[in-house]
Length: 226
Image: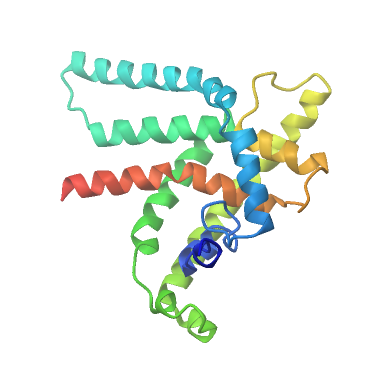
């Protein structure tokens, strides 16, 4: 009964945040999901691509150790939760977006931390997903929508920067470093080889899942504090 059980449960908060559930983890089983899984397997999670992120991990680990060492020498208190959170978000952001501005990263992380308790809140619309009439009355829906709009603006700015950089790279004027995840998805989108064309919203849905490691880490840190 694989096909009967292959669909994911529809969660209202996830549907809003992940652009109508067009990410890989939450999209309904079908041609789109199979295509995105193939892109993920071949382009994003291949052994060569994962190895290419090794320098990012080493660089961010060195910054983490150096900052802890500096605080230790100065005799200052060290907040490991804050340090590890910064390390995780910096590493994930560099892999997903390259040299993204610190302003974008800090704003995005702040919104994600605010979204964590809201997204994890139980809502009656999740218990009865087929009753669409309940969705407009959802308190979770209103809060998540406001946060989603903030995240969407950040993604729009980042993608615009990456598109501009890709255009300059083709002319020999942009960055010559290896592709990050957003570059890969934009290249695949423009290739014209996809059976089901993808949009910028689909790309943002995939990227938001890759950057939600920050949410998982924040949840883990919260559980430790309990």
